[in-house]
Length: 242
Image (tube, rainbow, N blue to C red; front, side, top):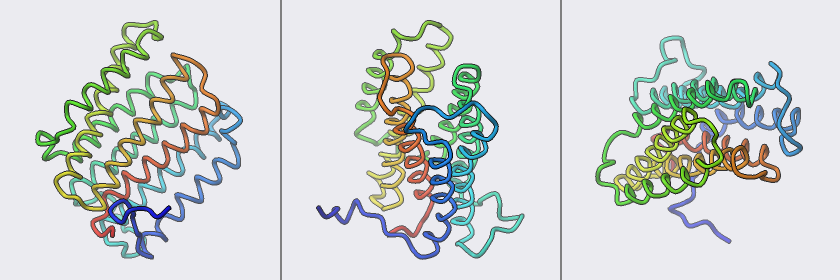
């Protein structure tokens, strides 16, 4: 089946080359730790290989901001573009969250807070036109429904409040990403919208598997959708997608 043209994303040669480290490190992580058989061991090695794909996407975002003019120089590490800069720091905080969540119980709250900061930065990077989005109420209701579904399985009131805050943030990102696509209709905006929605799916699997019931192949589903979500969000910083 052919993908409709408005939903297809064609990358330039430079964009593809700068994504090679991401796909290579993603493959290495899956080969070494095989998340389809269960969660990886709680080791520093797991941390190192788990965060490499996200660090590779940081390289892509930085390269996008300098027009893919070779390896970024020291004064080009922080993008001038507001959206790219916020997304770069969101990726860095996501990497911190990834590292924490290797220790799934011990460091779950620090990991959750790191991802909350990342989602706040994504939200800031998507600032603009959100009030005009026709999906605002829809995302509010979906977020509330998901919170009510998983809230009964959370034993701590403090953790329940933190999870509620995080759900509000990820749905705010999806709302603003959708608003950007409604406003611009560009391939970059579509990539951001897709990334935000896939991020919700990934986190929903985490929540259901942790607090509701066991999800078969949850680690593989979570990490695959998570990396894809971060990939699309990173692609949305490119101004020349076609």
